[in-house]
Length: 376
Image (cartoon, rainbow, N blue to C red; front, side, top):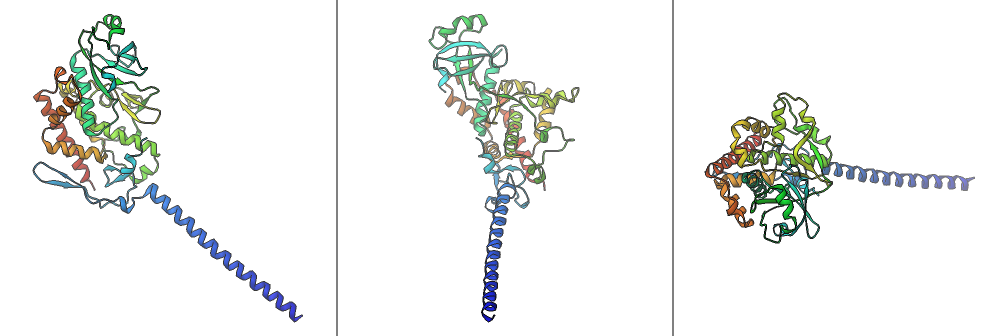
């Protein structure tokens, strides 16, 4: 009996030790899982300490500056300092045509005056023949302004001259004559992007009782990463269309709200989306030249558009500050345009009055960014 009692006691002791060890392992595993879950949540929904940068100073020409406060720390990491899209979200995106020989010219690319060109190597481009040269100039300068701003949503563009005796257009000479295009006219060639779809204005950017767009953590938490990336590009589009005074896109929708309350539910003009989800800003011929000419008619709606957003890509805001500081954005634009386009001098550039308008609009955007950073 004594031996049996001792054996039973030993078994109970061993069982207790095994249970104790098991509980320790379980507690350790639970703590590990909880820690991993919290780290994942921080990556998705919180501002990591290493991403909180020191206040950014955007310099002014008079050596003054404004600081971007970083006191608001309860924001998700898709937005930094309440007004800037974060660097990780910004990176989450997934000129041979100038002399290439055209072998086919067919209808396509929007307006009836445009044509879809196929080159000898099988690549394609949209050929835009403006009703007047100002349309081609507006399209071209808008493209190079986007380049200055670091906005890459416009299809690559090059200028070409309809040199009838030359080899480039020889195979489609009869098509050009049937279209009654002027000999030696300068046209723009933009890369053709297939399999694109229309785009609707996202809900956060639709009319919100006159309030500026202020994405809160709660709003961001309900949006998917692709939707956030698209919204980020929309904020670039707002700045870009204001600078160029392009009324032939979002502004025309805002204007039409006077009599068509459902216009915001329709696809946006001159805006497409690729299969990768990237926005493509097309048909920018209303920008800068023509847009500035009719500015008095549309300026009210341009201001509404600009005030609809207080979110910006940090790189775009930095370029705006640089162009503000230079005091001559048109000069920077012309230098880039002249460097890249052999036909630049022949096509022309901004007039002095238009150059002043561009600088004034750069200053307005800069001031708007400053005001947004001061909102607590």
